[in-house]
Image 1 (cartoon, helix red, strand yellow):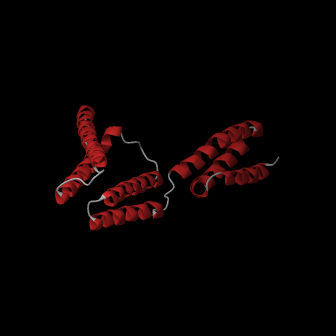
Image 2 (tube, rainbow, N blue to C red):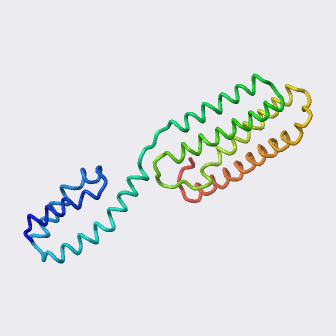
Image 3 (spheres, rainbow, N blue to C red):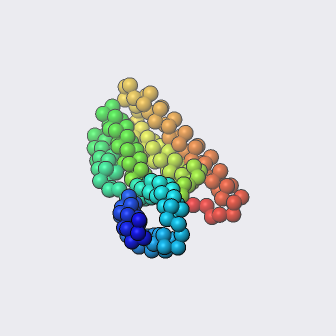
Length: 197
């Protein structure tokens, strides 16, 4: 096989890489392989090429998939739904339906956050403790809303004792977890010498 024919075959094999990678590194890879095929024994060069292609093509596709920006439509729709349901619950006032709507809003908000997080490109993982403020804020928000609703009504409607108690317990647990993780995050950042986020 001539060196020119081998380079043509190699160029066609490079089509296995993602387009962005191929456009950026393809010409250099072809030039290096052409020099190697001209200077070394072809069987030795092809053995390296096959091993390289077999290991790097899947890795490049995985990296391309992991760093791919995804659309924001799903998180946006669920965030809007969450806000709309909260507003409807506020308009309806404290009642069984209002409490149910708050739970629906919390679920829609959670789906919005989860789908937004999954849609972002994967980067360096943050420690678990870095999210302490989210729990603290969420717990405080739920607790403030619960206090505002119960103060506005004066007393709990019949059958609302259990949902109110569970919501308050959830808020207190979120606040406590946020405080504990926040302290751990600050302590970990202090020990490692890195600034706390």
